[in-house]
Length: 409
Image 1 (cartoon, rainbow, N blue to C red):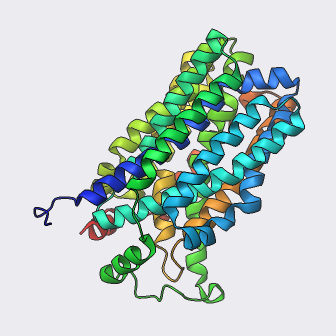
Image 2: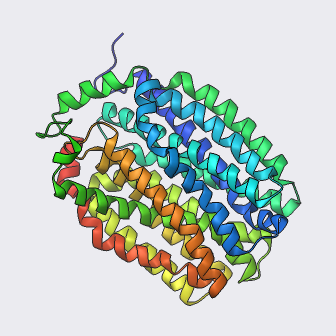
Image 3: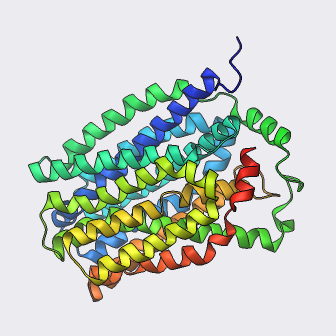
């Protein structure tokens, strides 16, 4: 069977839909959790600091076992790992929702972190494989589906909180949705992806440096670029963590809003991030990831800086919206650039960046929680615009327009 010139083969179109479904369900799980955090904290009768420590168990789990993602992908394939661990992640999130003590809550979040780390690397690895076969940027579109999933989960969580629906019931329904959608997605994903990607890499001739150089012989410049890319990704992740972990508590406790309105800060961040990722591939192809990242970092610094300087409920919503659009392409772009670093084995740069990103998530909740206990959540959230400035300064590590155009060609 032949396809018209320029047409996308059917198996690639199916694979793109399958990856999109995995990203979507990954977003639903986090999105549904964020608006229920104030209720969970009240039920467990814990302080901001204790909540921050418990929430840090998520990245602890990811750090402890997240590096197993690369060998698991080589053993089982990114398609199988992504679908199976996505279902497992939703199941252990239900365990966090029914936990009667802070210790069990933290333990459940530890398992959420492990499974979420494997999902994160596997879905992005598979998405990058599909993107290479497409010969154009589509990774931001996958992350856009994650964002719209998070928006859907956030709206569901906010509505459930406002209507008095219990956390266990909401998380049970979420688990059912995740199971069904991933069972549908798995048959659509690419089979035998390692051989396909190696063929594409060889044909493209993307680097003159051998792809299996020992780590001890990788130039310091390469590690420096990977570090800069990691800080950019952390900046994007810090905005997401601020919205998911703290925005509802900040809106309710310091701006005196109701539970339903408090969810809008998270929804606004994810919604604008979805829009940014929807148009992100076109922006990156036209202007280059470097320029897009610099403008995005400026939006984070300006939007959240003004929102925190002049606090109000809708000003906070607008600030998170600006920050969400600003970071829309940062994590996908940093992951793509890390995965393409010369001399590193396939998946190594992506896995290292993802692991270090999880390390930042380990620091974020307890640090912000400690600052909040000592002063206020408003003070803790000032770290967000600081990362916006860092993104602007480090954006030079991303690809400029001419390199992006060459890659697309």
